[in-house]
Image (cartoon, rainbow, N blue to C red; front, side):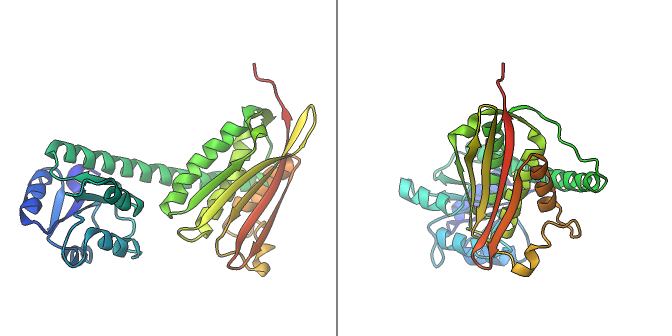
Length: 309
């Protein structure tokens, strides 16, 4: 998508500011000016902008209240917002950022800097969408191919040395992007022993844990909490067993449906594939869930210690 195709709504009750901003942006974007929050909402009934530039101090409905209304509406909540305000105090800026705005820019503004900031944020948003789509497609395709291998008895592990802690950090970073899209909090409690180098199938284990975390993100409502807990369960001179839990405070799963979650009959292959991977690694996977109280998936994996050069 080119800049000329992107739509920006500019909301400001000061007509001079509105004209100035429109003139700055018009050569590069499709611009819709709105002199009030009410006019902005009228516009949003007909267009879906790529970005809203929103003034804070306006009569009737100010920028903060307009943002609350936007975020509470399923049709508007994902539209990116940048506040553009004469307020220069840190408190006002933090209020805006905590509401989910991309940035809080101050008036008077530099036209070149304003254009650069907008271009930067729109580019980042576009890249993020592409990454999320690729991740979703990669996970889906990987699970479907693995399901066929498992059913054909051709699913095997490929073991090599890897840093278990680094793998977990990469998973957490990847899944945190998905959680933030739903305003969820992803907490990670990982024991010190996870920094060990071990021998195992890093790709398959990463796939299993990622499946569990993405399931938690998907089935947990907005503003929910998800936790990845990793602790040492057993250890010898040659091997170490980790206990891993993915815990969420989502809607939970009815008891009569839980027994079917590990079957390949349905369209979601994530849980049965994760269970198969864990069992091949000498571990086990189980699930506990209660309606309206959340779900906890527990697994153990046993791996040999390794000594990287």
